[in-house]
Length: 208
Image 1: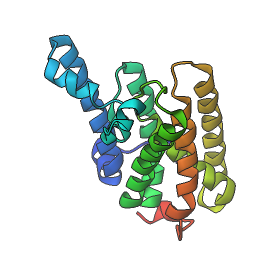
Image 2 (image 1 turned 180 degrees about the vertical axis):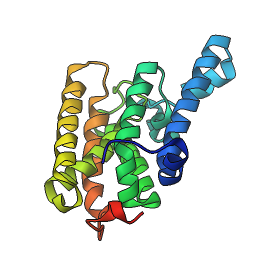
Image 3 (image 1 turned 45 degrees about the vertical axis):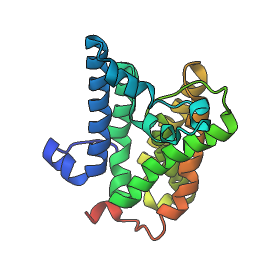
Image 4 (image 1 turned 135 degrees about the vertical axis):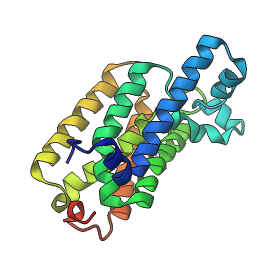
């Protein structure tokens, strides 16, 4: 389930939303890096107005609940998030189909940021990255592993459990990680799981 063997053209055809997410994340990172090197202040100002910052959201800048999902300021952050999306998002896009997957990914990210706003308050540190949305996908997988076991094979269930535990450990071990974003993303995905998986067939992976 989590081994990608498709060529580029097949990957784009089967997983258009995942392809869009990866493309926009990489493109925006490259734009930010080029703007930083060339000191293009107009672009840098746009980025400064897009990262997650609860105090600014409380001041009416509501778009900051959405835009941080697409921004990465370091290569390592971008790399690990994109690798996770590349490996674990395609099976869910196949399972849920395009529009439900959009709700799963973007809905989890936005819900996580909204919950972080209420529980983190104005003193929460600024944040960026696709991690909250990715943890939302992990939350859906967790729901499947615990309550919809017929939708996933045993080996894939074990893999996702190990990866999720490792990511949770990483969340608490590194001080720079947005703990609330990860935990609320996981919770959002778990809550969305039963809604999005309603009437999903056990043999979904054969129906494409």
